[in-house]
Image (tube, rainbow, N blue to C red; front, side, top):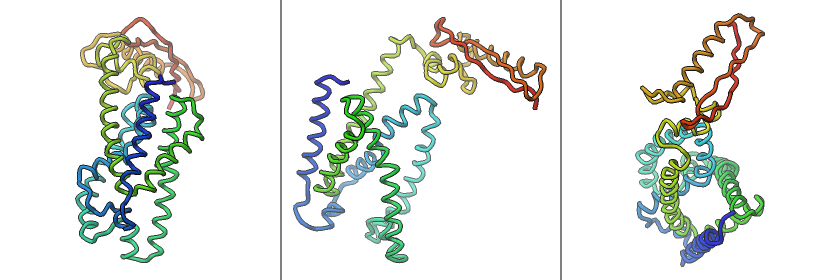
Amino acid sequence: MVSNVDAAIILVYLAATVLVGLWLRPKTNSTSEYFLASRNLKWPVVGAALFASNISTIHLVGLAASGYKEGLVWGNFEWGAVVTLLILAWVFVPFYLRTRLSTLPEFLEKRYSPACRAFLAFLAILAALFIHIGMSLYAGAAVFKLMFGVDVMTSLLLIAAITGLYTIVGGLRAVVVTETFQTVLLLGGSILITVLAWQALPEKGIHNLEELRAAVPPLHAQGGVNPHRPMVPGSQSDSSRSTQNWKRQLTQSAQGPGSQDEQQSSSYTGAQRGNAVRQPVSLKVVHGA
């Protein structure tokens, strides 16, 4: 649960976001103003809005937790997005601007038929609801439950109502401006959390990169040793000695007698965070090929 000051800051932020979105509602009934913000948005605002549209609670809650538990492998998908975004910016966006197209379904309608446009729009809505928006809402609801004790369903309805209110009333301009503000908060908050976490490491007995590697779950779950991650060259710490011990016992077990149905367990102990705390971990080795 959060303190009263933290809760007040969060509530003020939510109220300010809604008020800004309502204040930026279209002054005319023009569809171009409502859906396209009259085509006069500047590139920094558009870029910030695209960033905030892609980076959400899925990343700050879901992917961050997965990265902490399993490592950087969860970031591989995001690296691939760099290539697709460059293709979008250099190939497709100039085509959209030249032909004054607003959406991909609109292009398919002009190129093929209205039925093709309707089909793609239907698939896009389903994908947005059940993949991106649904996961974002659930991750946000999980945070609300942790911080305020509100159940998940109530949090889902609250977040959807707040977001839908200024989006429906304010149109694209309200969405872009509020997401630009959210981009600043996302980047600033992420940097601040990283700096504070790094400064807090010495309090947990972590003073170098090797001790940090031995403390994170991919190593911690194996007694402080991850055989798939190379340790710092030349180090003679407990972690490196545990790695050598793990390899030696694994080799001895693999060379021992036994049939294909026989299994043998060997255990090793690994140091955690450079201290004397050791946890036994069993490794099962199947003999025979």
